[in-house]
Amino acid sequence: IAEEITDRYGAMPEPARHLVEIVRLRALARAAGIGAIARERDRIVIKPAAAWMPSPEEERRLLLEFDGQLTVQGGALRLRAGGGAFRDDVARIRRALLALRGLARRREPAAAG
Image (cartoon, rainbow, N blue to C red; front, side):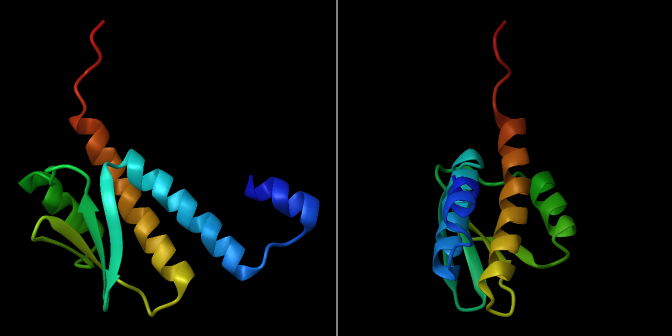
């Protein structure tokens, strides 16, 4: 839809681009089994929708992938935020959600066939 709007009306103003990014992140969060994303000071807090948390092995993999930028505590994942720029936070959140979506897919039961 964003491409259609840009094609028809030209470049979107920054607040509209931010809104489009938020909608995209929400869709990705839903696919990853995430119920909430919030910013708390210098951390982005990612809370699963259900009582799901990464297994110890998945947690180790995430910690390695995010090179210490991600911690798991209190039923949530805490990602170190960037320097405050919206696009930096979006990129970090997207990367984390893509990794979590992969974990969620591995946990889904195999389709009966």
